Length: 151
Image (tube, helix red, strand yellow):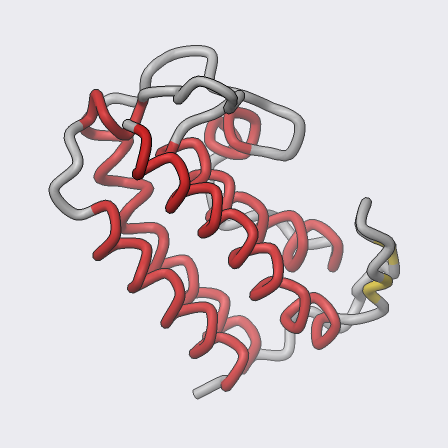
């Protein structure tokens, strides 16, 4: 097992417990002072790994493009996520990591294109990407925790 993936998986299991019992309406609520909602943040975490890992390595994302377009950086909720979509995103929180871990074992990320995040973090390879993801996940976990307190 990959230690970095295990760290991300632990955070995502925490998130699933954190949002357990929230209704679709609560997950879709955009609290005052925010420009997105809890389920958007969940979807964004799933989608971000696709871009950070797969797309930057010149690979096809493992997630359908409709989700990538809806939850990528610089988007916001345009409509409420359905119960079906919510369930799918919750499932993807962990299953997408299983896929990433399997793909890492296959060493398919060898053509990684270096880039810098908007925070100035340089990513030269998949190892840099995996080191960055927990920071990104932690930031969005904080947003989700704050939103949960006010919905």
